[in-house]
Amino acid sequence: MLELVSINGNVTPPEKAQISVFDRGFLYGDGIYEVARSYNRIFFGLEDHIDRLLNSAQRIQLEIGMSKDELISEIYRIYKHSEINDAYMRIVITRGEGRINLDPTQTELSSNVVIFIQKLPKIDPKIYDRGISLLTASVFRNPKKSLDPNIKSGNYLNNIMALGEAKKKGADDALMTNREGEVTEGTTWNIYAVINGEIVTPPDDADILRGITRKTLRELCANNKLKWIERPIKLAELVKADEVFTTGSVKEVVPVSQIDGQKIKNCPGAITKLLQKLYKGYIDDYCSARIGKYS
Amino acid sequence: MLELVSINGNVTPPEKAQISVFDRGFLYGDGIYEVARSYNRIFFGLEDHIDRLLNSAQRIQLEIGMSKDELISEIYRIYKHSEINDAYMRIVITRGEGRINLDPTQTELSSNVVIFIQKLPKIDPKIYDRGISLLTASVFRNPKKSLDPNIKSGNYLNNIMALGEAKKKGADDALMTNREGEVTEGTTWNIYAVINGEIVTPPDDADILRGITRKTLRELCANNKLKWIERPIKLAELVKADEVFTTGSVKEVVPVSQIDGQKIKNCPGAITKLLQKLYKGYIDDYCSARIGKYS
Image 1 (tube, each protein chain N blue to C red):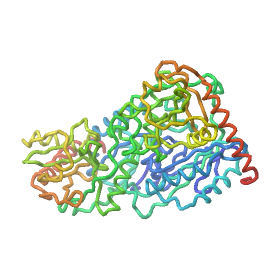
Image 2 (image 1 turned 90 degrees about the vertical axis):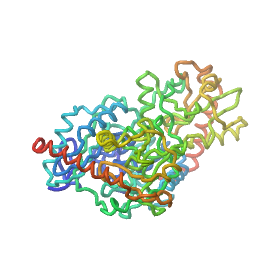
Image 3 (image 1 turned 180 degrees about the vertical axis):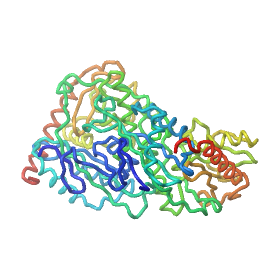
Image 4 (image 1 turned 45 degrees about the horizontal axis):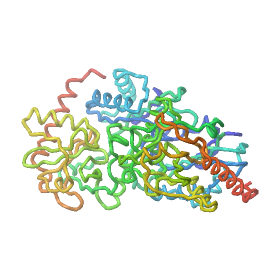
């Protein structure tokens, strides 16, 4: 089998993978998820992804009933049913199903664990050379005091509305700001400006998801004497930066060519290209160190 | 059959009602819904609920593919399969299913329509006499510029977090404020204060869902020479009001006995009791006028 879905440990072909309409993920988006990408059968950064999944669960008081090690083992156990070497893995855990009732403290709930293994989505290789165009969405990113972007949950309508608006207006993706006009993140990625040779990105406590790729880049910058600065960035400042790029687990490091129709000075800029290369090297080292461990 | 679920027109018992895990409602909360209650087989305010459903759809650019009349007919067609006279009906419409891809402008999506008919949830009759206790949640209501509460969507985690917090601390339900400290609404209801004989509630453009029961009360107040005022209310002002009550389609008009441990002066107050009665009368008239129309 290539693509498959596991529901509470039972492996099925994607077209047969169904869940109750009483599942709280379906009714309310009352669940959490993570996405990781495998490189030659090793999921890059899976430990970090599972740490974040456990953090999301804790933040919404969702009982997974599995430890970090058990979750990692289960993902690799399911992956063995697939022959895809470079796979897209999504794990969704909902609070379970019961009678329709918003109350999450009901005792009869038992979480549902769904694991998707599939081919990587088609990524046009040109985006790494030519960059992507962004449109600033008219909706603001969910503020952390309402629905913290660090809870990676089944509530993605905010991002979907932003992406729909960008696509309709011909852009490749949507950039999101907060009500102060500061840049936060994109629909599924963090954002960075290169200004006077320094890599600038919104801070940990902005309305952003603290990305795993972002964390890796921070480490790479420290190890390679590149200056990394976390501070609020106004949209006007971003547009005038020397380089702009995005990061995410699936598409990695992607240069940005324009924002709201305004061209970014260098695309891809020298630092963006360097980080693309350093990140690839980091993935190689990570995966090499784990060959045989999970197969 | 008593309780049932219809998925795209196919009626099944609740325990067999399943949907693809690739449905965008399950993955992202990318869907909308409405809830209505029937009184002796007539769904109260169904026209208003469907208007609001169509508005939610338009706001997130979701193509339902059915008109208002078709939706109402379909709900009553499904309802004929159930023998419950006083039912809870929930209609959920998602953007459909496809490969995992956040982009809502993909052309291959076709909406999924799920209709639940079930018994009314158990409501303790004492709440109408003794009132309910509320706790102000530490999370703020989603602001309308991020995720407008008027889009009645599958993104209910904000409310769930508030309710979970309230339940854990022993309250019956959660009240939500915005970052200005103004009262917005509860987890599934609007809120009102009675101050010097006037009924005060947050305005249409607050971070609230414009409730159908709220709209009905506004009409009842106009017809019965009760003063209705829409304006921002600070939490401190609400707690000191002469009466406080909530409204929602399922539980109707419910008095509030305390907020954050502070007792409300009158519970239930005279105006709350009058509105409970007027609302019941309004429902009776509405349903009587439609007897035979949908059976």
